[in-house]
Length: 258
Ligand code: OAD
Image: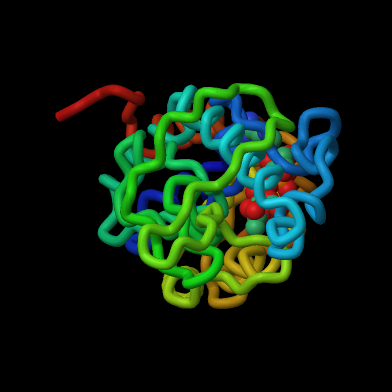
Protein backbone atom coordinates (compact mmCIF):
# COMPACT_ATOMS: atom_id res chain seq x y z
CA UNK A 1 0.00 0.00 0.00
CA UNK A 2 1.53 3.31 -1.05
CA UNK A 3 0.37 6.14 1.26
CA UNK A 4 -1.58 8.83 -0.58
CA UNK A 5 0.49 11.52 1.17
CA UNK A 6 3.60 10.06 -0.49
CA UNK A 7 1.91 10.07 -3.91
CA UNK A 8 0.94 13.71 -3.40
CA UNK A 9 4.48 14.62 -2.36
CA UNK A 10 5.92 12.88 -5.41
CA UNK A 11 3.47 14.54 -7.82
CA UNK A 12 4.28 17.98 -6.44
CA UNK A 13 8.05 17.49 -6.16
CA UNK A 14 10.04 19.86 -8.39
CA UNK A 15 13.45 18.53 -7.45
CA UNK A 16 13.67 14.77 -7.13
CA UNK A 17 16.75 12.76 -6.16
CA UNK A 18 17.03 9.00 -6.49
CA UNK A 19 19.87 7.43 -4.53
CA UNK A 20 20.66 3.79 -5.27
CA UNK A 21 22.73 0.97 -3.83
CA UNK A 22 23.43 -2.62 -4.76
CA UNK A 23 19.81 -3.68 -4.11
CA UNK A 24 18.61 -1.88 -7.24
CA UNK A 25 20.67 -4.27 -9.37
CA UNK A 26 19.88 -7.40 -7.32
CA UNK A 27 16.96 -8.37 -9.58
CA UNK A 28 19.33 -8.14 -12.56
CA UNK A 29 21.37 -10.93 -10.96
CA UNK A 30 24.18 -8.75 -9.60
CA UNK A 31 24.98 -9.78 -6.02
CA UNK A 32 24.74 -7.16 -3.26
CA UNK A 33 27.51 -6.80 -0.67
CA UNK A 34 25.81 -7.48 2.64
CA UNK A 35 22.75 -9.65 2.03
CA UNK A 36 22.98 -12.81 4.13
CA UNK A 37 24.18 -15.82 2.05
CA UNK A 38 24.41 -14.04 -1.30
CA UNK A 39 26.29 -10.83 -0.38
CA UNK A 40 29.80 -10.46 -1.85
CA UNK A 41 31.28 -9.53 1.53
CA UNK A 42 29.85 -12.76 2.99
CA UNK A 43 31.94 -14.76 0.53
CA UNK A 44 34.98 -12.59 -0.09
CA UNK A 45 37.30 -10.65 2.20
CA UNK A 46 37.22 -6.94 1.27
CA UNK A 47 40.68 -6.45 2.77
CA UNK A 48 42.09 -8.97 0.26
CA UNK A 49 40.27 -7.55 -2.77
CA UNK A 50 39.14 -3.96 -2.32
CA UNK A 51 42.05 -1.98 -0.92
CA UNK A 52 45.19 -0.41 -2.46
CA UNK A 53 47.30 -2.71 -0.23
CA UNK A 54 45.58 -5.78 -1.68
CA UNK A 55 46.35 -4.61 -5.22
CA UNK A 56 49.97 -3.90 -4.33
CA UNK A 57 50.26 -7.39 -2.79
CA UNK A 58 48.52 -9.36 -5.53
CA UNK A 59 47.41 -7.31 -8.55
CA UNK A 60 46.38 -10.36 -10.61
CA UNK A 61 44.05 -11.62 -7.87
CA UNK A 62 42.37 -8.23 -7.49
CA UNK A 63 42.16 -7.52 -11.24
CA UNK A 64 40.77 -11.01 -11.87
CA UNK A 65 38.07 -10.56 -9.25
CA UNK A 66 36.95 -7.25 -10.75
CA UNK A 67 37.00 -8.78 -14.23
CA UNK A 68 34.66 -11.49 -12.92
CA UNK A 69 32.34 -8.80 -11.55
CA UNK A 70 32.58 -6.80 -14.81
CA UNK A 71 31.64 -9.88 -16.77
CA UNK A 72 28.59 -10.49 -14.56
CA UNK A 73 27.45 -6.92 -15.30
CA UNK A 74 28.07 -7.32 -19.05
CA UNK A 75 25.84 -10.41 -19.00
CA UNK A 76 23.10 -8.67 -16.96
CA UNK A 77 20.22 -6.51 -18.15
CA UNK A 78 18.59 -3.51 -16.44
CA UNK A 79 15.51 -4.55 -14.47
CA UNK A 80 12.13 -2.78 -14.00
CA UNK A 81 13.59 -0.71 -11.13
CA UNK A 82 16.25 0.82 -13.42
CA UNK A 83 13.61 1.47 -16.07
CA UNK A 84 11.16 3.04 -13.59
CA UNK A 85 13.91 5.40 -12.36
CA UNK A 86 14.67 6.50 -15.92
CA UNK A 87 10.94 7.12 -16.46
CA UNK A 88 10.54 9.05 -13.18
CA UNK A 89 13.02 11.62 -14.50
CA UNK A 90 10.49 12.61 -17.17
CA UNK A 91 7.93 13.67 -14.55
CA UNK A 92 9.88 16.29 -12.59
CA UNK A 93 11.47 19.62 -13.37
CA UNK A 94 14.86 18.63 -11.92
CA UNK A 95 16.07 15.09 -11.48
CA UNK A 96 19.34 13.79 -10.07
CA UNK A 97 20.35 10.14 -9.95
CA UNK A 98 23.11 9.26 -7.50
CA UNK A 99 24.42 5.72 -7.30
CA UNK A 100 26.90 3.84 -5.17
CA UNK A 101 26.98 1.12 -7.81
CA UNK A 102 29.90 0.53 -10.16
CA UNK A 103 27.75 -1.10 -12.86
CA UNK A 104 26.24 0.75 -15.84
CA UNK A 105 22.70 -0.60 -15.61
CA UNK A 106 21.17 2.83 -14.95
CA UNK A 107 22.75 4.19 -18.13
CA UNK A 108 21.63 1.15 -20.10
CA UNK A 109 18.06 1.75 -18.87
CA UNK A 110 18.19 5.29 -20.30
CA UNK A 111 19.30 7.43 -17.34
CA UNK A 112 21.92 10.03 -18.12
CA UNK A 113 24.26 12.22 -16.05
CA UNK A 114 24.35 9.53 -13.35
CA UNK A 115 26.53 10.52 -10.39
CA UNK A 116 28.73 7.52 -9.59
CA UNK A 117 30.01 7.98 -6.03
CA UNK A 118 32.07 4.78 -6.04
CA UNK A 119 33.44 4.86 -9.59
CA UNK A 120 32.86 2.46 -12.45
CA UNK A 121 33.99 -1.03 -13.42
CA UNK A 122 34.42 0.18 -17.00
CA UNK A 123 36.90 3.00 -16.39
CA UNK A 124 40.24 1.70 -15.12
CA UNK A 125 43.11 4.02 -14.39
CA UNK A 126 46.83 3.60 -13.85
CA UNK A 127 47.87 2.54 -10.35
CA UNK A 128 51.19 4.34 -10.85
CA UNK A 129 50.40 7.61 -12.67
CA UNK A 130 46.61 7.75 -12.07
CA UNK A 131 45.81 8.54 -15.72
CA UNK A 132 42.50 7.10 -16.94
CA UNK A 133 42.91 4.41 -19.54
CA UNK A 134 41.57 5.31 -22.96
CA UNK A 135 41.86 1.77 -24.32
CA UNK A 136 38.47 0.01 -24.16
CA UNK A 137 38.53 -3.07 -21.96
CA UNK A 138 38.12 -6.36 -23.77
CA UNK A 139 35.20 -8.64 -22.97
CA UNK A 140 36.50 -10.89 -20.18
CA UNK A 141 36.66 -14.50 -21.24
CA UNK A 142 37.21 -16.29 -17.95
CA UNK A 143 33.94 -16.51 -16.11
CA UNK A 144 35.12 -18.04 -12.82
CA UNK A 145 35.64 -16.01 -9.71
CA UNK A 146 38.99 -16.47 -8.00
CA UNK A 147 40.88 -16.57 -11.34
CA UNK A 148 44.00 -14.46 -11.44
CA UNK A 149 44.29 -12.14 -14.41
CA UNK A 150 47.35 -9.96 -14.97
CA UNK A 151 46.17 -6.30 -15.27
CA UNK A 152 46.82 -4.50 -18.58
CA UNK A 153 49.57 -1.87 -18.66
CA UNK A 154 49.17 1.90 -18.86
CA UNK A 155 49.95 3.12 -22.37
CA UNK A 156 51.57 6.25 -20.90
CA UNK A 157 53.92 5.00 -18.18
CA UNK A 158 53.74 1.21 -18.32
CA UNK A 159 52.28 0.94 -14.81
CA UNK A 160 49.54 -1.54 -14.00
CA UNK A 161 45.92 -0.52 -14.59
CA UNK A 162 43.64 -0.79 -11.57
CA UNK A 163 39.83 -0.94 -11.51
CA UNK A 164 38.27 2.54 -11.57
CA UNK A 165 36.36 2.00 -8.36
CA UNK A 166 36.70 3.48 -4.88
CA UNK A 167 38.40 1.07 -2.50
CA UNK A 168 38.25 0.97 1.27
CA UNK A 169 40.45 3.69 2.71
CA UNK A 170 40.20 5.86 -0.44
CA UNK A 171 38.43 9.17 -0.92
CA UNK A 172 35.36 9.46 -3.08
CA UNK A 173 35.67 11.55 -6.26
CA UNK A 174 35.23 15.10 -4.96
CA UNK A 175 33.19 16.43 -7.90
CA UNK A 176 30.70 13.57 -7.66
CA UNK A 177 30.41 13.83 -3.89
CA UNK A 178 29.87 17.60 -3.97
CA UNK A 179 27.23 17.29 -6.69
CA UNK A 180 25.46 14.57 -4.69
CA UNK A 181 25.48 16.59 -1.48
CA UNK A 182 24.23 19.71 -3.30
CA UNK A 183 21.38 17.80 -4.92
CA UNK A 184 20.45 16.22 -1.58
CA UNK A 185 20.37 19.61 0.17
CA UNK A 186 18.18 21.15 -2.51
CA UNK A 187 15.66 18.42 -3.30
CA UNK A 188 11.99 18.21 -2.24
CA UNK A 189 11.94 14.44 -2.23
CA UNK A 190 14.60 11.73 -2.18
CA UNK A 191 14.00 8.06 -2.93
CA UNK A 192 16.66 5.78 -1.46
CA UNK A 193 16.67 2.38 -3.15
CA UNK A 194 18.39 -0.85 -2.13
CA UNK A 195 21.12 0.32 0.19
CA UNK A 196 22.10 -0.79 3.67
CA UNK A 197 23.21 2.80 4.36
CA UNK A 198 26.31 1.80 6.29
CA UNK A 199 29.09 3.05 4.01
CA UNK A 200 30.04 6.69 4.54
CA UNK A 201 30.17 9.35 3.24
CA UNK A 202 27.65 8.06 0.64
CA UNK A 203 25.20 7.15 3.40
CA UNK A 204 25.06 10.85 4.33
CA UNK A 205 23.04 11.59 1.19
CA UNK A 206 19.52 10.59 2.37
CA UNK A 207 20.20 12.01 5.80
CA UNK A 208 21.27 15.34 4.31
CA UNK A 209 18.08 15.51 2.24
CA UNK A 210 15.96 14.80 5.29
CA UNK A 211 17.67 17.34 7.54
CA UNK A 212 17.28 19.90 4.72
CA UNK A 213 13.50 19.40 4.80
CA UNK A 214 12.90 16.86 2.02
CA UNK A 215 10.54 13.90 2.12
CA UNK A 216 12.61 10.70 2.16
CA UNK A 217 11.40 7.31 0.91
CA UNK A 218 13.25 4.03 1.51
CA UNK A 219 12.63 1.11 -0.86
CA UNK A 220 14.11 -2.12 0.47
CA UNK A 221 12.69 -5.55 1.39
CA UNK A 222 14.65 -5.32 4.67
CA UNK A 223 13.93 -1.69 5.49
CA UNK A 224 13.39 -0.71 9.11
CA UNK A 225 10.05 0.80 10.03
CA UNK A 226 9.42 4.47 9.40
CA UNK A 227 11.20 6.41 12.11
CA UNK A 228 10.57 10.07 11.48
CA UNK A 229 8.14 12.57 10.05
CA UNK A 230 8.52 13.07 6.29
CA UNK A 231 9.89 9.54 6.04
CA UNK A 232 8.25 6.63 4.18
CA UNK A 233 9.16 2.99 3.82
CA UNK A 234 8.12 0.77 0.92
CA UNK A 235 9.18 -2.65 2.07
CA UNK A 236 9.63 -4.78 -1.03
CA UNK A 237 11.86 -5.44 -4.02
CA UNK A 238 12.77 -2.35 -6.03
CA UNK A 239 11.68 -4.02 -9.28
CA UNK A 240 8.12 -4.16 -7.95
CA UNK A 241 7.87 -1.10 -5.70
CA UNK A 242 9.30 1.46 -8.13
CA UNK A 243 7.07 0.58 -11.14
CA UNK A 244 4.07 0.59 -8.78
CA UNK A 245 5.05 4.00 -7.39
CA UNK A 246 5.37 5.32 -10.95
CA UNK A 247 2.01 3.87 -11.94
CA UNK A 248 0.13 5.17 -8.92
CA UNK A 249 1.73 8.63 -8.91
CA UNK A 250 1.66 9.36 -12.63
CA UNK A 251 -0.68 6.76 -14.11
CA UNK A 252 2.17 5.43 -16.20
CA UNK A 253 2.97 1.81 -16.78
CA UNK A 254 6.54 0.94 -17.71
CA UNK A 255 7.08 0.79 -21.43
CA UNK A 256 4.23 3.23 -22.18
CA UNK A 257 5.33 6.11 -24.41
CA UNK A 258 3.84 9.36 -25.57
P1 OAD B 1 24.63 -3.56 0.57
O1 OAD B 1 24.89 -4.93 0.10
O2 OAD B 1 25.29 -3.09 1.82
O3 OAD B 1 23.06 -3.38 0.78
C1 OAD B 1 22.16 -3.78 -0.21
C2 OAD B 1 20.75 -3.50 0.27
O4 OAD B 1 19.86 -3.84 -0.77
C3 OAD B 1 20.33 -4.31 1.51
O5 OAD B 1 19.79 -3.42 2.49
C4 OAD B 1 19.25 -5.25 0.96
O6 OAD B 1 18.20 -5.48 1.92
C5 OAD B 1 18.72 -4.47 -0.22
N1 OAD B 1 18.12 -5.28 -1.28
C6 OAD B 1 18.39 -6.56 -1.64
N2 OAD B 1 17.61 -6.93 -2.66
C7 OAD B 1 16.84 -5.86 -2.99
C8 OAD B 1 15.85 -5.60 -3.97
N3 OAD B 1 15.46 -6.53 -4.84
N4 OAD B 1 15.28 -4.37 -3.98
C9 OAD B 1 15.65 -3.41 -3.10
N5 OAD B 1 16.58 -3.60 -2.15
C10 OAD B 1 17.17 -4.80 -2.09
O7 OAD B 1 24.93 -2.57 -0.66
P2 OAD B 1 25.18 -1.00 -0.64
O8 OAD B 1 24.35 -0.34 0.41
O9 OAD B 1 25.06 -0.54 -2.03
O10 OAD B 1 31.32 0.16 -1.74
O11 OAD B 1 26.69 -0.97 -0.20
C11 OAD B 1 27.36 0.25 -0.10
C12 OAD B 1 28.79 0.09 -0.52
O12 OAD B 1 29.41 -0.96 0.22
C13 OAD B 1 29.00 -0.33 -1.97
O13 OAD B 1 28.92 0.75 -2.88
C14 OAD B 1 30.38 -0.91 -1.92
C15 OAD B 1 30.27 -1.73 -0.68
O14 OAD B 1 31.47 -2.00 -0.01
C16 OAD B 1 32.39 0.24 -2.51
O15 OAD B 1 32.64 -0.58 -3.36
C17 OAD B 1 33.24 1.43 -2.21
